[in-house]
Length: 348
Image (cartoon, rainbow, N blue to C red; front, top):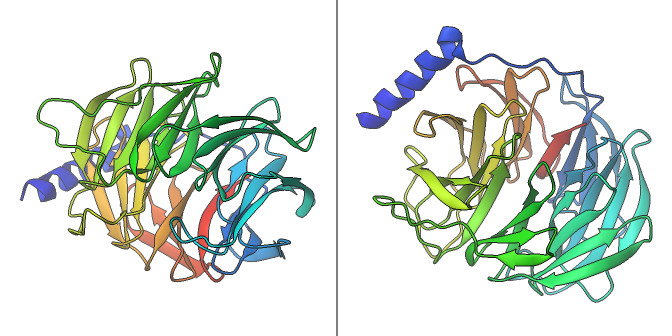
């Protein structure tokens, strides 16, 4: 009953007009990483129809980071497997020219294998995690080389996000808490604290998705033990709030729930997807208990906000489907072919 009331209040809040989308320039396109098909796909930003594709030179495309200037995208070649079962890991990063829709460069990471999460910086470099060696790399595409490597505290270094001022970097660990890297001192700090009274949150099953608010003041983290999300104050790296994903199905705490998170460009909305549960949540960033849950096709992972601020596109990795969801109502309004199984996508 409580959940129903909360969802109803959120719907009323949104429909009342308190949520005003910010204007944005039209997107040139969408780049999508089809992990299942090992293909890089380009989509029309309005119709979601495919306009081009690239076959990578090796196995297997995984994640994605678009450079701040919107001209290039970086995609790791992870290997044929998944975390914990990647017997033939790859060691390369693809640099994609978005205007030409072609591979402009291939960066060889040498001894470092299974590259996964990555974040591009304003100076043209890229931070990358390699989960098998649990290492954080700084890669300089201009030199086609690894500039530095740092052991990551924890196990299963996975996703990476930067603060907008590029002073700190956060890494989720599939088998441990989030790690915090001070980019000026080039050292790891104590990670976010889940010790808020009344909030149950452990790191036994690790952390998965994480996202940075556009203003850099908040980090949102998915906790795999409880299917909860946690808001972290980036000034102190301590939890300020936490809430379960409403009506999330109960699952084994020993297995990752593959929760992904994304802030909208205006910072007012958080979208969460759960791979195992086939659900998407539209969450009020100002009050994370205000949630609308929407069932989608099997295996949702990727999240991309339409530039007009009115809808969001979710890619279902297992179903080869793209679903556009209206942010005001939380209802699916369109679907499109999603290749063999898109894991992540982004407007550019």
